[in-house]
Image (cartoon, rainbow, N blue to C red; front, side):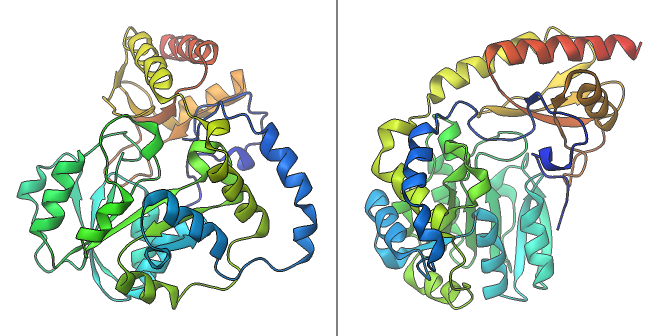
Length: 343
């Protein structure tokens, strides 16, 4: 297990005033959800559904698949570990840099792990002998995206490999990504999605995977009963039933991201990597990300993600997620100040 993921707010000894480190939608209005959960408080005195059946039913209806296609998990990370466990000892190919829990889950369950770069031409990547291929799309940490048509062609051309496609950030882009119903025509596809990211409820740990029944049946054998708590189930059902209350203005957020990147690009001493999402990587041309992180936190209460522990990145990379226009301005000014101190 890697301590030092995006939001290490819990580990900070200094007050965090602005959090750029966590890839969640910062503008969600949770008042109605809070009111609803208050009415559900008595459910805490009873066991929740063993397999979150009512939530599974809603997810199946929303995505136009059967309930047998859906497994609800305690956050998307649990889905990675369930897959790795269900096929213990398999061979896994992982795109990097990307979320470390793919590799951690595979290593825990004795997969033979190999890697390819997210910058590689997918047509040149060999999938021979690979039981699984793990891809994050849009990719964490750099926000890169593989178009749906390209992924579907890749999946169709490599039927002996199961593609585990993590779409935790599907709501953070307007590009065309895989649709859960794509599993119907692709027996070698597992799509993983998160409910918490787009609705700013990561503390509830709620995610799900969608695949053909032979895959979900095998995974369900390893699913721990009552692994989804009652509040997570009720919050997710409320969000699915009242989608209008939780609309994420992704185009506006992307425009703010473009403006943020434009302002950052005016600074000497950094390189901002292109993104298809609302979070992105920045490379320092001088200094290291750990020092910048500590200085920002102690001086201004600003928290960023030191990205040096992503496989394939070094100590000069950090990741940030676009916040409000005023907070973005504060960050840009603070970064400019730090860069001036490095001269």
